[in-house]
Image (cartoon, rainbow, N blue to C red):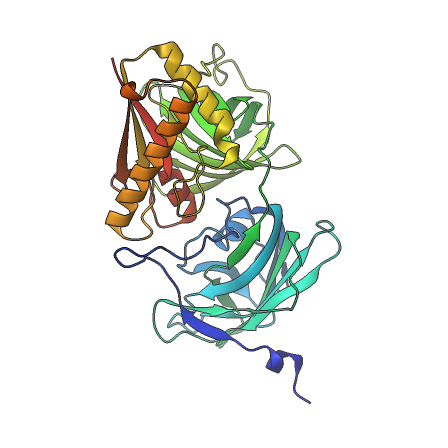
Amino acid sequence: MRSARAVWLLAVVPFLAAAADGEKVGPPDLFTFASGALPLAFGVTGQATPIGFEQALDLIDGNTVKASVLTQAAPDAGAWFLYELPAPTTFTRLAVPEVHETPSAFQTFFREVVVAGSSVGPDAGFEVLGRATLSAHGKKGLETSLTLTPEQPAVRWVRVELSGGLDVREAKSTFHFSELVGEGTQAEAPRAEGFNGGYRLKNDSLDLQQDGPVVTGCFDGEGTLHGTVSGPMLRARGVATRTKVVSLWVLQRTVAGVLRGVRSTNGAPFRVVELSSATLGPKEKCPAPPAKKVSCGAVLHGVRFGYDTAKVLPDSEPLLERLAAGLRDDGSPKAIIEGHTSSEGAEQYNLELSRRRAEAVVAELVKRGLDAKQLTAVGRGEATPLASNADEVGRSLNRRVEVRCER
């Protein structure tokens, strides 16, 4: 009788890192932090150095470059990660891209991957969704699909277990992993609330006020912050008062009131932050409630579109209402609505898509009473990114709508 491992078949196929001219990119990855997957817990099995939130994010950051998960790990050591999804999700494909060994006797890539899901809760009801025994890819641009169990359930919690190494040669090794990709269907996630009050982590501090889809505030005691909330995610941009240095955040709020996510300052790579609720000192808090109007100069991540289309999704309506009211109050003679994309796909395709999305926003504003003659739609494509396109956090920040006014 063959072992259980032997009956799981693998499929190794090319993946779409970028499309050719005129082609669309592959389906969206629903299992990324930027799309709402939130690490809840993590740990090691066997003998290995402890892991943390950073390793949990590495598995779902949308970057296929391999990262160290375990260090000083025994051959039988493993790692497990528990994630919460923003809404019930049915996976039609799970995959691991870029399985490559490092030419070192002290490093290896994980061999066994088991993914389980639950619709009950984070502590119960888990069923295996898929698994794979990996082998090294012979060239770049390949990924291994996990074999899925029949009749995939809709799940809210996902547990990922990694174990074994492709080529373990030493008593203590570093175990690498690239990414777990999840494609499928997902229900619409409600907009998160509660981005209010003070938060702090060492030298990082945030003083936030949420009003529907809009968040304003101060950071580090010297800058103003503006952001928008869509689903569980807050995406915000801040400018330091004294230096004018820009910081970017992508954050989720846990049920315990902790802000988990990443921050980039002055174009530096994103770093992990976990800010706990805190009573802020006078120098950290906003001196006065910041303006919550959405108008000229706005950078909006909460205007959402259907995948690879210019169709404005219904959950964008509250933000569009705020934008229409803000532009009406400002009375600017002309407003330019700019569409921006990330870099997946062909440059010309993205330019056209961004133009169509800007036109869709203009049409929504006209429906809300603004004069079409005072609005201009412009597509910028991928030409002016806010962040690196190397991972999904940066790409999600680059997909945006900006508003520029002429006085």
